[in-house]
Amino acid sequence: MKTYLKERDVHKIIKAAGNARDRLMMLLLWVTGVRVSELINIKPKDLDTQSKVLIVRRLKAQGERYRQIPVRPDVCRELDQYIQALKLGPDTRVFGIQRWQINRIIRGAAQLAGFAGKVMRHPESNRDHYISPHTFRSALAVLWMQRNPDLISQKALQSMYGHQSFNTTARYVKLGLEDVTGVYKDLWKPGKNGR
Image (cartoon, rainbow, N blue to C red; front, side, top):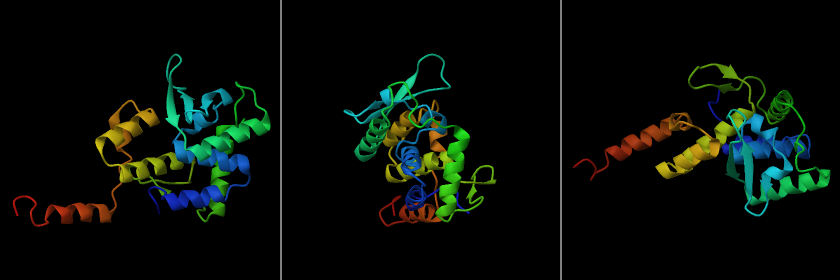
């Protein structure tokens, strides 16, 4: 049972996508950490190919609120090519599908990648669940926190994810036994704590 997906797990699932659209949706969930509700509302006008930024409109906010999310250059290019190939107007939703369809697509790709059934365990509720769009968001946040443990990087993640409270972002800090053991061993190294 996993509490979060590792990077190689996410890549296996993306690779199992049934078509280019599904692969691109999963890739965007993975590299940007957008919520599924934000993904299904992306429009061509939201992609800035020059700055490689995606403008994500906040659906829960009152008024016109948005945040800008950096997009990997290769993914930005792929999204732009997808939009151009379909000849979408600036205000047309890029993917044109609903939340439940994305859940089904991801669950199917996960199953093809070897993650069938309820393979995830929520660390706080201890309940088992299927891989979902939010699982990609969690996986990116965990990877980010592991690779960038400094406060500035964590505040950047908070901004990118649109969290009001840093406590929400801090939930993505996942420590395995090897992390705890490493910190503990480092605590008792010669030269530390007056030793």
